[in-house]
Length: 186
Image (cartoon, rainbow, N blue to C red; front, side, top):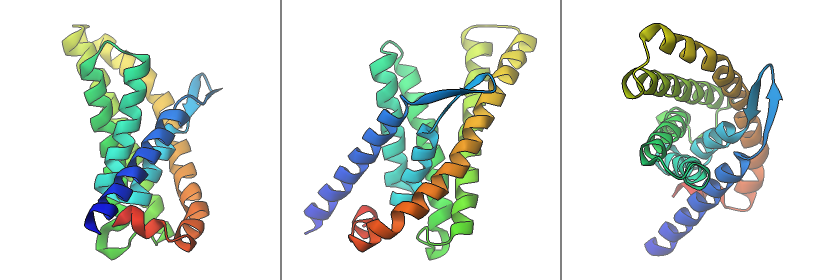
């Protein structure tokens, strides 16, 4: 019985990772940036599966996208996995704290906000470290680059903060009725 439960959980993680991978393709321009909903799906992973399993699904789906479309930088895959894992982990940790089991909408919104901004902070840190220490640019140029990337990251964060709780609220009743949600979390 335990093996069947573990296998089901792995399958749900794989399905969510595939969803993150596919949603990363869909982007649209907004205010000089490109908005995508992959971050919303990463947050949804944390809400559906909790911090650890949701984090693995989010990190794996995003890292696989990088592997397929940027096939030359192992460090990028690792950084992508860690930052997307962290986003879903923070979201899931807050949503599931104090036995909430992601059942409190207000806390789910807080969880999504914290998860989204965790990712933005990690992305800005990665940008700074790469620009300053890997490429060796002067600090003033690095801050200009970080500053230029922040608006797009903020737009994506806000889109994810809005979309993830809405998606979760829409999906939860059907997943509970079909007895799928408890299987995703066991």
